[in-house]
Image (cartoon, rainbow over the protein chains, first blue to last red):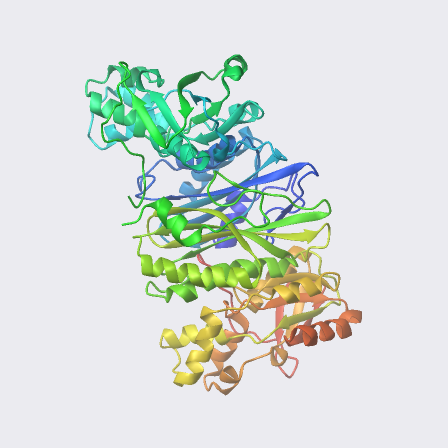
Length: 318
Length: 318
């Protein structure tokens, strides 16, 4: 069986590019420009909690990095470097090769450099720390939404939650639909280009990992405001629209995590620029509500009535 | 049971100090000075691999940060910020409170700011990413040892390995000795002051986590050199010196990890300055060998003979 150091060398060591010092020392080293701030974030994925034990390793490698890139997107930061800490029950070369391929393909697509990490024996656990650059004072924070801001989301919501519901037998999707939904769950596309484009346009932003209601709730809480969301305006996939069971559909739309789209707020005068940005990068953006005084997220049905079903986001210890 | 967000708020959220933005957003933000490089490192501690499942949580909190601070010490970097990702089987308040107390007490002692993290459900796994500052080009790297350099270590080696051997029943220590050794294992003191003082004095450095032979071996490998180490010169605790079983004693001294002392190389002309540094910070430093052309670490017994026992460092997948 290959050693820990062989594993790192075999699957993860590549020559340093922008970094002063990459894999192979006690720490990585890199410079940030005079006018730049570094955005850093860490996300841990655990077998049995975030993915099934026999998950496809290449897709898992993609997703492990994707959820971290999504945090950079939500900050308006340009992702630059990553660290990867792995706990593995055993060193299985085929698994590691596929995992590294998925991880590094996405890293290359975003010009992100893997600069270090840790490998240890233990129950499967994948922990990435990501670093991004953002010009000083221009990061998209959660605490800067203003009263009257439009609330926007990118892409479509609910497909990942639908895939999960299908896996768990709560719905039964046709095979082609299930496969499409599964791509949303397994291969989320971090909205980095959108985040970069929203610098100077959006007031606040977050990525939707725990569900729209919960994540917009974080913007509300940090900005000391409330939000109204028109249920009928939330962009919904065809698969979801066709779903007979409305309660599963609404749950997936409002509380389904794992889509990794961005939710952001912006002044009304920015509408045309935001629409143009979406068109330029080929990603639909949708106005779904407005920030208001008060607290919490209020969902309004097509008749303007407050929707009072029990909907909540994902919380590992809730 | 408290929610994930309550957990973070309750045990880990403190107001941002130096950071532009701390806990509570998608990422933390911080500036580094114009002339500074950022050193970053991540270390994962897994239940059953790095510590026993019923380990004292306060000590575990200390150690989780200590092993990461030790990486900063080994780089000559001043530790500044940390991220903490936790997988927990359940959210047990008493455990979390004690863990946070141990973690944050050590963070405060080193003026390190916890700026973010992640909390999830899963088998107990503790993953820290640490960030330190170092003036450009002055980091203590592994790959800069030179032929003729002295090889030095700080403190005493082997106590942590002896505690482990005692726990595993391979030796039987008197209670008072066992308790002292256990402090080395559970509460390692990262040698940050030594690392900072060695900037400009040492040519190469590493922290001893996998055992002296293995870690000095990393310096050799990265510097394309060999090293001779005089077994009799390695600083050894009283407990270890008294041990009847010489094979366990030598194993602990040369291959025992977890002491988190520093091993470094420096030019012969630096001897007086390094001795003075050790005296100033109250940490003994010992010359134990020399770098030479060739490859690998050669252990020499008091008669100058090459010591050929099978000794190797710790490797999770070896």
